[in-house]
Length: 475
Ligand SMILES: [Zn+2]
Image (tube, rainbow, N blue to C red; front, side):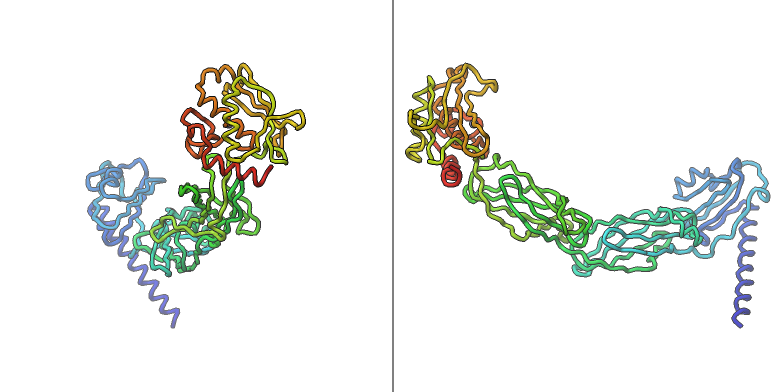
């Protein structure tokens, strides 16, 4: 009974096919119009050197004007449109019966077909195919439906990757796969359903849909803030192979200043986190920041509903730290004295500078006597190779060293008394272990480019904080 039923169907199908063929062939013979509303696709085989004309236009003109798709290769001209009536005219002599063959077009346009195979931490893959255009890649549109916040996004790509298994299954020429490298970090957190559509005459949901995925928010830890770096790790567990960015703000609680944001990518080695590359280590040139007590606010960057950055504070953040503008070497001895020797023609200014520092901490800086060891020597030189007005050399360059302060007479002689005094005060600061800085504007004695307006020659609060730090922790 079943078999008979199939036989009947088969006969019926052939009948339709013959009917269509006859109708179409006769249309062509008469060079009349045919209606693309009914069948959408015609395949006409002709020798390439024959000229044909559609509605009075060449194929290329017709294609441009009607958005028709033609494939004039290997003698095959495939006409495809969703609507419209096309009249085929012969413009040069050719034998229609000999040069044209028609194929019965599908009665209804087939929907795209395919599978969503895989949705995982790095990839969305599958294939999609339109049997009406069996060797033409089609687009797939991937919808990411966030069920948690009821929002949806999509991305459209072309499914044109070769897959032998598709060829084996008779799916066109096999160039119908897609393998999208997905970075889940671009989307907000939540539970997602992923649906993929094959894009064609009527867009069709692929088999295997929907698949689900859960996107998480950034987490991480701020390990440390040192003299050189701010370090830690941050990631979104839902994208274990993709790094995220980290945002750093530095708040100077002494001055009330904010610095940042500084954004770096957390992609350094960090064992045990995802693919092991989610660490960060921001190098900081502390010399460019004012002295003071700080907090470091460090966040992993996630995604808000409108896809703008959304910050997630890391564990241990904010973290307090302090910035001191000091070197790791100094001339002060363990008895907390800076004993100096030598001579300079700028002794008046030098003595004023010594007094400035000793007025803050009395008795530290002393003129050397025969009974004590010299910590720093002062001298005048005609010029310094650097061209600087003065320099302080300390050796060794770690811990307590012995220093030489050299004044360039060729530069110093051109300066006024206040400027000379500031130079002397600045170089004593170096012997005390303070370093050049720029973060306090031009107000500190220890600013790298001093001038006559530098704090009017007086120690600033920052100079004193740095000196305190050295006095209490280093000498
Ligand atoms: Zn200096």
